[in-house]
Image (cartoon, rainbow, N blue to C red):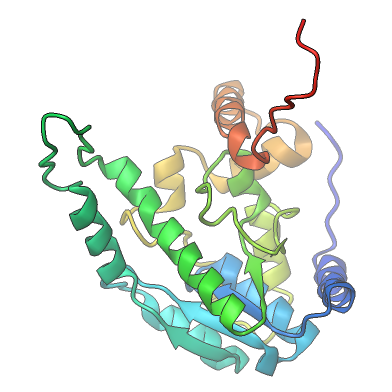
Length: 260
């Protein structure tokens, strides 16, 4: 296996410095972050507050109807002293279902049908959230912070035009395990939110239940080359290959290239 060393405090300080450098180069002062109450957005908000000042961090809570743990999201904003706003995307989600006839397709003979499919429906939430965050960031002349971590990105546990969209990906170089380690070095954060079981806030299941592998297994696969179980390694590798398209920009078809 590969050697692995990780200094969480040093990585934390490097990320704070990187945020400041990015802000200076691009000429912005404010950032917008979708606050889920989970470790990723919690740690990202804390890093941005350290880098830019809490008055320049705007936390947006985006429940889809009723969110059972929204009190955790509010606690993050209140603990860090960042600005906060709640926008319920439930109405938008229901309106989209209605206008596309997803729940009860009534397409005519000359129209194609759009039948309801639960897995596709789960991707709608992240996209509506991103549209809302983009709107708010533009209105505030702010940059949108990406909070997806390397573990999620590796196995494709993300949504195109949803949580993959941002102005800078703050945690994309850190595995889920490493995000927790960084968070635990930040005394301003409640420990229970940093180690909270990750969920998507939409399906009612934990991330690991949906993935069928643990984040520690993904961490070991990424950093050491193997989690120690060949079957699990193979499963992670399959997800990595299947999700490759989510990590790449759309291909540009060159009309000037000579065809063989």
